[in-house]
Length: 454
Image (tube, rainbow, N blue to C red; front, top):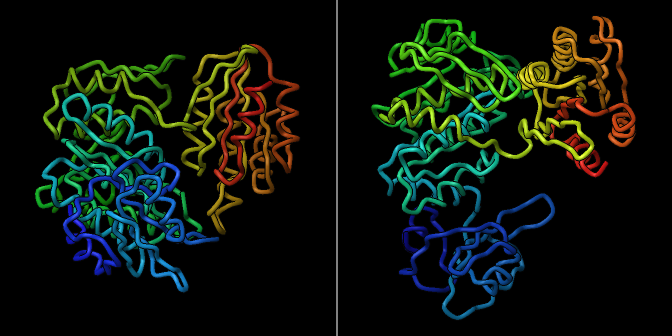
């Protein structure tokens, strides 16, 4: 796309430079600029990235898109360009929308209360068996990350994007930019219930993804999720593909077997055996979502199976790390809500190991539901007969109390990561497995890093 096209969609002002300049690659980090990139300066809490446009240009950027900043003196650099806009966040969405419109390719968008990133990873692996695909890196799933992903399109033949939200209206904006041909909703749980007030409201917010679905597009939903199942029965006007284990669905898993290296199931109605390299029921569902997408894209089942077998998880999501001391860490400390806690605890139970240790911290953004949902996690710990429980944080004390009241003997509570880590180091032994999980702001990655140095 050209500078002129960008000016048109953003209603921006060209401070200097050529309108004919071609813009292919974009970056928001002055330190990661590659020759020929266009730098986009976003306004942060402490400063406006637009102030660093000169660093970006000197590092090889051909131009910069920045906010109007009071008192900013703009220097003219030869063979460069500067565009000023009212809001670079709005602008990046408009530019990404323009980029998307230039590609007539399958676009798979994924949302859900839990499992978005791992489902995206496994769908990407399946789609990549047939197409040169681009996917969201890590969890860049917001109003900046998703457009930046779209701007990474080159000679790609398919796009797999993750869409996150915690308020009404956010998915409406993202789906209007991405215009998916396939929209996947993994589930409707309790993540962000503090912001949205009820699971029914979370469902409404998740369904916004369908607003941007292209004509003839397909919704792919988890038919075992109670709210999605009810919605499916009441909304036949959409083209819908369902997947599940319990409720009758387009793609189903039967005869599921779990072991330390993963899981196996028989895919119905195809009667094909599917091998999943990660254990736990959650990854059976993720695989079914990927199978559903693969079939919609006419990918042969043999290639779908290969894609599932080869998929790689994003960092800090059920990332299994063996230590030199002979114990295993399940690093799942990127984020946490009740549904993902439940899945992770079930996964811990099923993995091969001597003693199972759960190190769990506060789950955030739960509002008035916080106490109840932390208590439910405590019940999951007890139900799965976890050997040792360590909690960190005020809210997580509810996990500890309920687990102890329901038969878990070894329970330890702490108000900081340092003390929890020291306790864990004293009790963990060869062949033990420790799950490390909490909301991201609890900074549990420092527990993992300390254990790996242990």
